[in-house]
Length: 383
Image 1 (cartoon, rainbow, N blue to C red):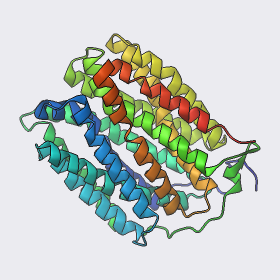
Image 2 (image 1 turned 120 degrees about the horizontal axis):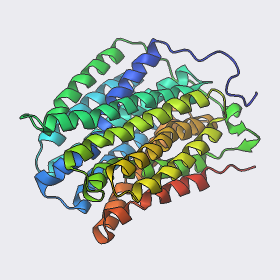
Image 3 (image 1 turned 90 degrees about the vertical axis):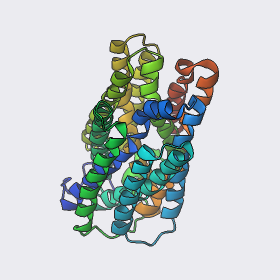
Image 4 (image 1 turned 60 degrees about the vertical axis):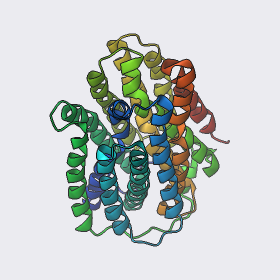
């Protein structure tokens, strides 16, 4: 089989594709909320950096549990997506209105577990519906996660400016999830595709890809993404000196940049091997990170945030598609593996918060380029 990503039938979006994109948008709304609500949550609870970091840790534990469960579950994909998104939306309401830190940490866990269970099956649906072009389909799917990410901090900021408060964002999120769940309920999803290793992905440009290395790369990529996403608003507020409500709204720039990166990746993946596109994305992220971390004003910080976001945004779907293609497991099981290790990456904000507690947040954010360098090293192919 040829290594070219353009061999065979053209990439075409079907009803299943669009319904999967809608489910990813709903997931993105819930997934993107944790970082932007952090300044409000910390203020309401009087939490330190370290204690606030327990929320992404709880979320990450939920992600790992969902990934482990995906490797053994026989429940139909549609049921898991519907229940997963529904319970995650309820957990979001608990995060907003739970008040006590123990309640909000539990809500973060439930959101991570159930939203990720839905996410795994949604990615598997896209991978099986567009087997040969899964890198393009998954990168496009992440575009809708980005669109949700752009909307989320803006909505949170707008809600915070009203008498309803920032918590009312989770009412809007629940309505969006309800629409996505209805669409999934009314759509027949594809069955599980039994696959052997896809040599078009495993042998690309005369290199071999190890599944162990792809999983290590995913850990580092997710660690970088979550470090930036979770701490961006707080970094812009406390380290750069941008007013809190503006800093929260500026997180939308990060998600907008991720959107651009995913759009570029989805197009490039139809013309270049996914591994090559991944390396281009990591290079872009490494260029933007020091610009952001050295910024002393809003303009420079926004430039750094944009460049880093373009690169980081493209990395997860590309690395995930490489792992699915290199694995002998089904798409559901492969994506379960991806989300298990992604959960370990999502613990990264805790280490950043612990370091920030000692040396300050600007120095603590040096973890970001460190994770990106690990991703570069682990994604180097074996010849």
